[in-house]
Every structure is written in C-alpha cells, then in structure tokens.
Image (cartoon, helix red, strand yellow):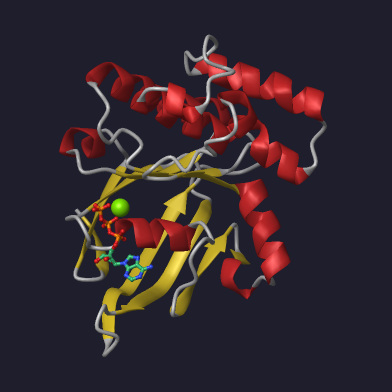
Length: 231
Ligand SMILES: Nc1ncnc2c1ncn2[C@@H]1O[C@H](COP(=O)(O)OP(=O)(O)OP(=O)(O)O)[C@@H](O)[C@H]1O
Ligand SMILES: [Mg+2]
C-alpha cells in the first residue's frame, strides 16, 4: 500500500538554458530547481510571466530535456531512459494539460481523448467507453463529435483534461488549466481535480497565476530567478 507521505515525483537540481535570439549567448531560465511531490498532494507553482513555469512543467513531464539535473517518477530516473522508453513512460504515467490545449484540430473531442489509449494499444471499444465516461464527467456528453474549432475555450480545456486522464496517470501536470476561463468553468475544473485526488490518490502540479486558486492547494511554490521556493 502506498502511504500518503510517499514521494511520487521529484526534481533534482534542474537547470535549463535556451540560446538567446541573437545567437550570441544563453538565456538561463532554470538555475537550480528542486521539488518533491507526495502521493495525493496538490501543489501550485506561481511566478511572473516568462519566469520558466511551462519550461519546468515540460521538464517534469519528460517533454523537454534539462541541461542538467534529473526528474524521478516513483524513483525512476526519467532522463536516463532511452527515447522509446521515455515515450512510453510519458504515455503511460504522465497526464499533461498544456497551456494552449494542443488538441488535434482534425479529430473530434472523443477521438482526442481516446488518442493516448490508442497510442498505448488499448482496444477501441474499451477506450471509447472510457473516453465517453470522462467527457460526461466534464459535462461534455453533448460535444463528443465536435472538433476543437467547434468548441469554446472552456470546453477545449475540459477535453484536454479528459485526455490527460485517459491512461490513469499517477500525476497530473496542468499548465494554467483555468487560464481565461469564467468562474463556472474554473470551478468545474478545480472541483474535478480535487475529486480525483480523493478518488484515486492523484498528485497534481498546477501552474496558475491566480492567487485564490493557488491558496486552495496544499503547497504553493514560487519560481523566481530560476529557483523554486516554498511560499
Ligand atoms: N524553445 C525555446 N527557445 C528559446 N527560448 C525559450 C523556449 N521556450 C521558452 N523560452 C524562453 O524561456 C522563458 C520561459 O518561458 P516559459 O514558457 O517557461 O514561461 P512561463 O513562466 O510559462 O510564462 P507564462 O506565464 O507567460 O506562460 C521565456 O523567456 C521564453 O522566451
Ligand atoms: Mg507558461
């Protein structure tokens, strides 16, 4: 049995730089980021625009490689995985909600939600049933066959959340999942996340610029000057 104190996700000494526009140097975005997330814990990451929050979340989810440091999911070192293992780890273990949805425009809502299960090789009937139930839980049962362009911003965000849950990840990494949403949609998404924690011991890393949302989380971390501190 897992105990609530169990660490499910850990980042150690993460550093990340990008080439600057002029190509004559490096932009040092993350300098030495350390973070530990427990089972069933919901943490918020806040910080000014451009400080590196999305970059950090991508690194936590195995999407973008750090220059140095490593990320551990249940003690598995993510960046020592070979590319194919890293891809299947992402597919099976990480529920990622991108800042700008990243829904596939040519696919319907239900097809987008089914995609991670399709990649994993789950049979179509099972994944269709599961995707339908998830979309229903997000109040989208009347939108199964709409394409992203036919959905409102809040609806797209909810589809993206359903997709993140499709393969039963142990951790959800959500990049501003309530950005630009009205109060009702914000509440729907947050209450869903908190319910999931109760139901499945899910851990959640939430990036938000809204203090009221951050304050509802178990812990708030601020990213500033490339370092994360508990605030
Ligand atoms: N692929 C890239 N190449 C070069 N620079 C990048 C790249 N990705 C991000 N950056 C730079 O890194 C910095 C951090 O970007 P990031 O998207 O992580 O910020 P953020 O904290 O999520 O901001 P916001 O709150 O506006 O979403 C920015 O200055 C950005 O220009
Ligand atoms: Mg961002």
